[in-house]
Amino acid sequence: MDGYLGVIVIVVVVALLAAGGLFLLFRPGGKSAPPVEPPETAPLPQEEKERPKTGAEEGEGATTTLPPPVKPAEPMVVKPEVEVPLPSAGRMVRLRSRLARSQSALGRGLLDLLSRDRLDDEVWDEVEELLIKADVGVAPTQAIVEELRTKVKVLGSRTPEEVRALLREQLLIQVNPDLDRTLHVQPHGERAAVVLVVGVNGTGKTTTTGKLARVLVGDGKKVVLGAADTFRAAAADQLQTWGERVGAETVRGPEGGDPASVAFDAVSKGIEDKADVVIVDTAGRLHTKTGLMDELGKVKRVIEKKATVDEVLLVLDATTGQNGMRQAQVFGEVVNITGIALTKLDGTAKGGIVISVQRELGVPVKLAGLGEGADDLAPFDPEVFVDAIIGE
Image (tube, rainbow, N blue to C red):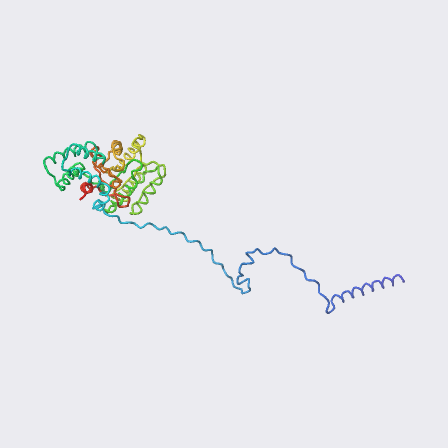
């Protein structure tokens, strides 16, 4: 019995202790359990801290969409303004003063000698020397001196006006105003005329091609340019710039490509676009290099599969003098030159090459370069040339 009572006592004590613990926990004013802290989060990046809050983040309930990034404006490609060149008519008259500045020394020297009271053999030797120094050539010089001596004997006494008239007459005969200096640039029905421009390095060949395009556009013709000088990328770039200035399209190929292929494509483009003239610029080449000259012949033959080559212009530098004669002869053997474009004629007193090159080749000077300006290429006029030499 005693054991049973002991168990009851223990149970009662445990129950009282448990009730006391619950009372302490839930009694009014008792401390609550400590809050549970949330897990630590990584700090926001700097740009997130600095980013302005959207309306939703600020509790406004609105949604704000950021504008898309603005693309930078692409640079505008400004095409060069197409120029309206001067027509060919009267160009050489306008440029006569430039020609006179370089050639008048020859004219003054001849007039001074021929105006002397006594014209002996020594004076005639001086006349001959002046003409040869001006690159007139030996045979033309001898012909001029012989005719002048005969005329002077017939006249007897001479006034300055008579001397000038005599000299003008003889120089004009040698320049030969009767040669056909027409540029053959008239289209053949639906087919464009073709002009092939050839010459050695450094004569101003590509520049002359560009200036010729200006001459023809100034005369109202539609022109296509062929950049068949594929050895120099700069030559094709230069020609294209000339073309863009006057609205002429330039056909070009890859650097180092086949010049004949470019020439063929240019002629095809000219026919397709119903152009009046196709001007093909070829690579400058030394007349002593057989392989290069053969290639030039190939260019001409390939063009002739598509069209007739109406004009072959040889560009000569007037300052090269008699060396230009040998160049002209070799080029003439390869591609049958039809005309000469004489450049830098305003920068030399050796304008007599006009006479000598025509006499040797039977080919007329058709164009004269009289300056570095864009419109300083002119159709050659024999009378303007001679008048510039002897002055007023």
